[in-house]
Length: 387
Image (tube, rainbow, N blue to C red; front, side, top):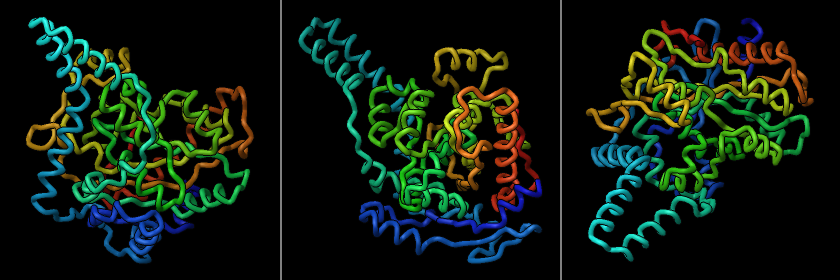
């Protein structure tokens, strides 16, 4: 671990505390938002004994909840419930309208309903990145007391990309855990785009392409399919790609005493990185597993069906037994680049040994990242377990 510890400590960590960010700042021009984040950024180093030096001295800074007004609390609570309901309410609404018009013989109304539904379901969605700059989106940062930390070497790497350095290939920025909803990962792109000066293209499960309303929301922001083909296509155009590594299966993993992450045998990222000559950046969303309580059957039926259908079928409850998450601080940490072992040269058919070795390196980098920051979230006694 000494080499990775050295990498973690040799460069500065940068903290952007968005917990008190005024949602009105979302409307600022890009240049002004970047200047704002630069002023907000606090830089620190982590000593071997866990103490800090630099602009941050409070070793429990990630656990602090920012007070919010009652109006913000209610608005965000309603927003989250509406967001989750959007996954299935359109189908329920369509079914009820279809049943009603059919039973009353309103054929014209029935035809119009079907046409509108098909239009929403299949019409191509135009890009509208500004939707994530709306104040309603930024209220979530206050609700979660969201804090984003990144390693200086990662920003330096992306700066090389922007300068046209061919050795700085595209990055696969993967986050864990997925939990019920990967809110920590979902809230990162708008902030990272301004801080790193380059957008991160997020991936979404293919099933979301068939959910009206939800498909519009995600595709407005520029999300792409999590398929291998889509990821390769995006990286070939010079984009950095962000994805949740443990996927839908990660929703069924319970973390109690330790943080259990479904990655031990999931080596797709290592293989793809070797094949494309790209490097990997591990990230971790502290607090993600505490937002909801999940209820899973002991026989694994729900998990098996979810894998078969490639969509989540799981019972869960959040704040006040609703679909809104608990108000927990989220601490999202982006580590240093885990360099491609073949120095960026693609390996068309990597051997199993090469895949295994790079996969172990990625897991070790993620574990070192977790261990370096868990104390700031009050998790000194927790470990990360790869299952």
